Length: 117
Image (cartoon, helix red, strand yellow):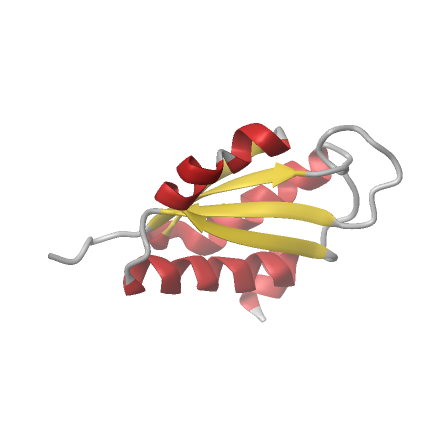
């Protein structure tokens, strides 16, 4: 049975999020539910939106099982930036852009203008 909504968790890791300067990019991790086609398609869509909103973003995608096997979040000291849900994807991506900008981790494009374009 298909899920009614998809959601992913977004994490930041690397030099921009662990206080090292200078940071020239934004390393993000998208953790999606599984390797099924709906989950993967939604994660790819989120990656496209985040790439448009956050300049110099390097985005990695892992399913929950892959992340658990690799312990990527723990090993990279990743910081949770929020969820993106299919019903509120544009607003959620914009909010993550604002979170990154507010933390002074570097410039973020005008999320609303890019998402609406």
